[in-house]
Amino acid sequence: MFWYINFGEDMRRDQKITFPFVRRLTENYSPSNLIFENDLLECSLLGAAKYPKKGVTSTNCSLVANLTTISSGYIKSRVDVGGIRYFDVEYNLIVSTKTVIMKFSLEIDGRKISNVETSYD
Image (tube, rainbow, N blue to C red):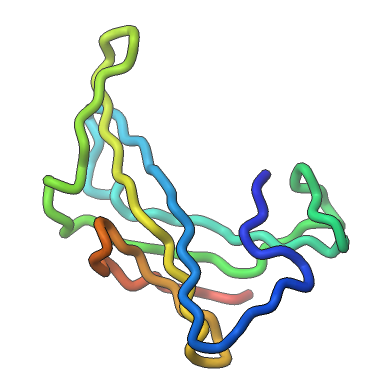
């Protein structure tokens, strides 16, 4: 596991934090595969846990980003060593701390592509 914001880290207002990601799609992907759903985890330990563990890690919030309308130019065709074709979508998850609540969005090549729906349960 990789922790992007560590316990005790200074979270200033008007900060834009960028986290790079790659989403891999199979050759026969459908538009629904371009709706990215992820949970952001938090850890109750002072030192970050190496693996998710009940009672130590929990969901902080759930994120949903809909990229079904992005240009096909943002979806890069690849071929693995076995000759199997797949596609990569390289994007940045942006966390903005302009307000008291963190706001999330997705960027590709420095351009905002999608807002991210966030739910805290």
